Length: 346
Image (cartoon, rainbow, N blue to C red; front, side):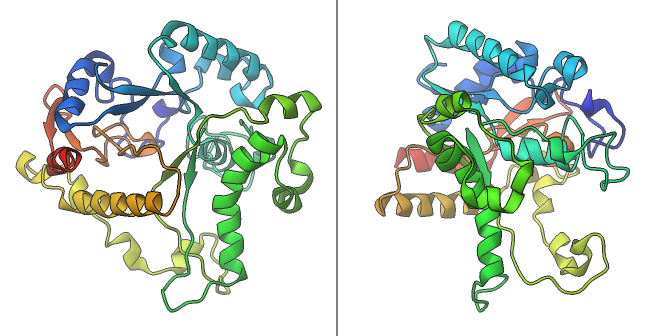
């Protein structure tokens, strides 16, 4: 029900149809085969329950059933654990003979922080200080589900600025705590890391012995999502509630909005050289990381198709494939898809 609330989605759209992959999955699989991809990461929707492509299935991607939200508050209740286990068992039973790779939760940190602390994402709960931004809530009672993790590197604002303690603390909390919280902490040690407890204190729940034993070593691989960097610098003295008001206003003027221009012609929309440049540079550095000994097993491009992007609705286009929302959701490969095809052939 979150997406039907006024002012929650940028263009007041909803995800009922999105890009229609439920009914056009065969077409989408053929598109991936033509590009040369050999794996497909997608989500099974809890609330809605491919040849030569290995499926990587995400069990939970933030779409908790409305019935459970209404019944006991969804992830605010321990009852969700038993329900989730039943749901996961259904997935394993029905699809286990065809799916070897499962992702239990997509970006649990994002789900908790934006769904329960700031109220930006569903279910729209938040702390009392977020006046007027959501209906109700208390981030002190946000769920902490135990995995694909999001990250945001936090370098100094310029190459000439030496990292200091603030940069290191920001990086520690924003990246390493997401990793240590879900991996090196709870999933390997059976508890939150000491550095996290030192910062958050009594707000963190305590693991029971049974919980600690059940999560310890309970993963086969870790997926790392990353999007962009956040620059960490000393905070100037300011009375502004939103510190973004004190930063360079050009940061909101120099984005690549030309890639999301809904008035552009189809021919113009398929020209996405900045996306090609992005993937080229990132895959080059992934290759370097592998050569340096990092155990990288695969890379998923986000995303195959333009899609319904949470609170942004249909206002942004991330796909390698252009989806024409005005003409029966027809698919058209962008230049980046053609680049990927050539890249994978090398």
